[in-house]
Length: 209
Image (cartoon, rainbow, N blue to C red; front, side):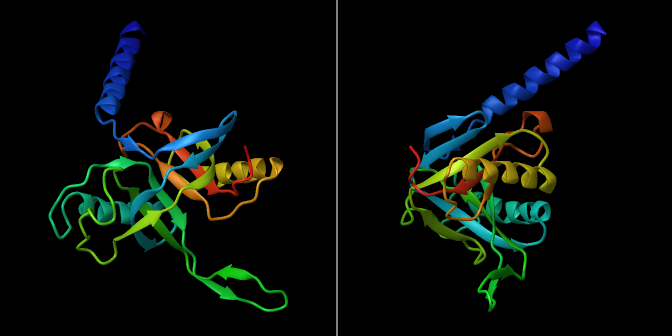
């Protein structure tokens, strides 16, 4: 038993050390309010490299990752490499159609916008242009986001569970949702599920202080 515990401890040290060695730049924000695992954050403006893919939530992330990773690895017009940042974000991009009596909206095709945040040292003018037309660069303005953090598997079940919890908390606090939810992942795929940092982020109005 003691030998097994030593092996487990040594493995944990190696894993955590590797994570520290891979420390990368993260999105900049200020915490406005904290309530257990929930937060209200003010994010600074930033640039995304983004691509839109079809499929379910889990499949879409896998499809998009390789496309975006090729871009930051030199698949761009200047052949420059761009440093990896965190998180990797994924948002629904459903096509909408209008209905009558009453007027509503319905998603008719499941699409996801998956993005890498670009390092803060870049501007739209200085970032290398993507070779792949399916990768675009987009400036995101400063915005207020409600967030919930959790560990665990990258699954649709977990995504839906924590999104529902965050939406409920937002309504309890009297905030107004002003955009689609984003699923944010901060770790490499080989990171054990219990060490992963995942978040759901939902844009809210700026009235909460």
